[in-house]
Amino acid sequence: MQNISAEELKQRLEKNEKLNLVDVREPDENAAFNIGGTLIPLGKIQAMQIEEIENLKENEVIFYCRSGSRSMIACLFLESFGFKNTKNLGGGMLEWQKKFDNGR
Image (cartoon, rainbow, N blue to C red; front, top):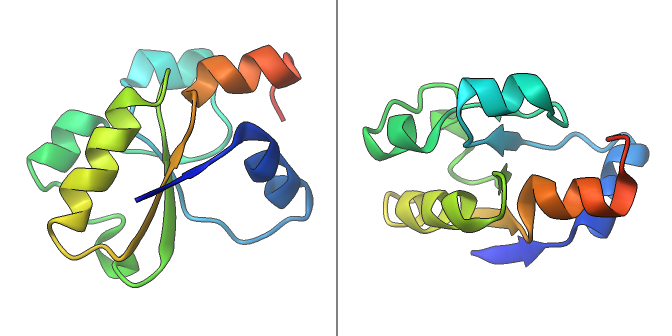
């Protein structure tokens, strides 16, 4: 697992890079504010209900949550199941909103 900063992720989004973003928060958190990732709550990942990303084991997948803790757990968990290039958004959505205020 590697970390990615809010600044680096924002730059990559602004360049319209094709990114595999996964939001591991709960649906209500995602509805309140999100940056466009696929919603797969951490509980579903831990139950291995990951059909949406199963084919991305060899690709970069960037996980995010509120603070970076749940997404770090998701990265480490999925690495143990063969995901090769997981990245955790350091500071999560709290850091994103602090730096960029209005989202994307």
